[in-house]
Length: 287
Image (cartoon, rainbow, N blue to C red; front, side):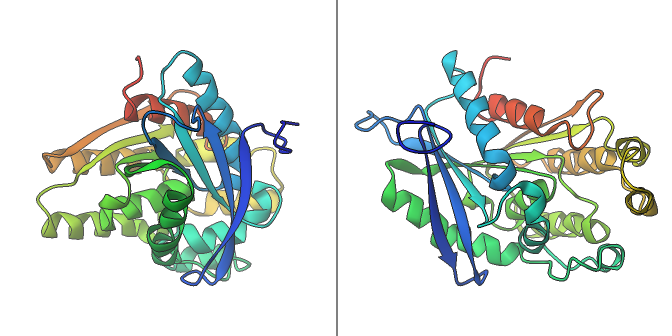
């Protein structure tokens, strides 16, 4: 246990209510190379699914900072007053999806609420970011986002509706299949209304995040779960590559974008690779 009383040294836990969402969020704050009295305010990295990703994210960042691959960062994880990641499934489905997916609801009737991405975005813009900027010495014009799976979908939604929210986007294994690929409609509407997209964007996905790979990934799960995995044809690799290409082909002057497919990786094995590679690209670390 660290001197500050937390299991992970140099971290804090806070709680902040959102009237937009109608719920309270558990905020995980990690000081990664940030020191009182530093010459410059620190960039902020916001991550979703913090109940499962915060600790590993902080450790990965601190390891990379040993070789100065990353600048000092304040890491802010958005989570819930619950335990581990698997306990947050219903809430993350509520908050990280941009619409109601009827086919998903038919397969998973226990997921009663979805489509809350606009409310979460409003909370981040009007509640969370002002709270962080008033409490810590950070640069309000240097914010990065990273999310995996539904978190990657949410980040893509923000990129295509309010890109100024963050300056950099790490979008790991984004669930672009959601609601029949509705995110591609968002992309088309953005392109019709804008001539530029000011952001630096990394897309990453595991090579086995195809329909066939998902069946192999589910091989040890109970039969009913395997059947649900087989019921929908989802090719996350193809969808990510299609969206990345569409964005590149728009030739937005202020958009810097890259994508990567990681060999031999499944949806549950690739998150840390996505984070590491995203940070290396977004902060111009050695490659």
